[in-house]
Length: 287
Ligand code: ATR
Image (cartoon, rainbow, N blue to C red):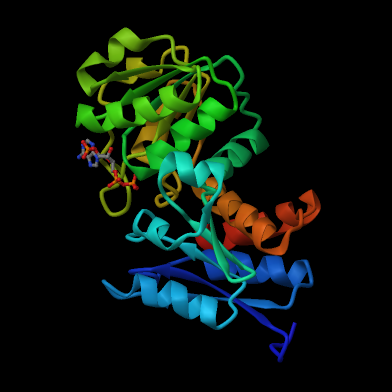
């Protein structure tokens, strides 16, 4: 669709933003859904986040995504938070409506949509989350929401795992246990393990938080939120143990689809979701 006087503006606030895939996904979604909008990357310098949000609002932007390092800070500029953003304490999607800023967090939902698409079931499962950063928080809340039975949170810095456990206990009845990497043997059986740390991300592709492959025994799924490389060492090791694996590309894609649906108050038909995912996959891995 050509850009004209009625085109609505969307964009990503972050720093850096040079390698983002969000414009690729969002502009394709708009094209296939025949919505007159354009999505751009916006590098926001340190200390300029409030200028960016107020500027976007002043210029009648439809919405924004927010990425590193602003997902937590941006909460200060939101008038209303949705349930996920409130629980997680981070916003990745803003919508401007009637002069108000609405903050959402679609990361966890994106992961669950990606997992469900691959056939992963959650109800009454025991899940293990490696890491306790911002991503782990979104994953833990998302798992509690889909009614897993038990959540283990494993982190080098145990205090950070405890913070997430407290959030889960505040909002859900899910059993949560925190542990460190020396206690992994005692946790079995685990049905699904989520790798949410940056360990194994390009260029450190040989790194892995799991040293002993027996950790994967009797597991159903190993999920890494990293998508570069396509197969992390963690996923490679899981595969060697006969475990089904999923990388983080779907999470990235579906958090974007969810944001698009919020901005446009619509649902993207599954057929279009699938076509664009295939294009996105090819764009990332086959170019
Ligand atoms: P994100 O928002 O992407 O989750 P983050 O908040 O910086 O990023 O969190 C990074 C996670 O990776 C943390 O759980 C971190 O562990 P600590 O809390 O102990 O720092 C984990 N992590 C990163 N590098 C690690 C390493 N070399 N060994 C163990 N854990 C690591």
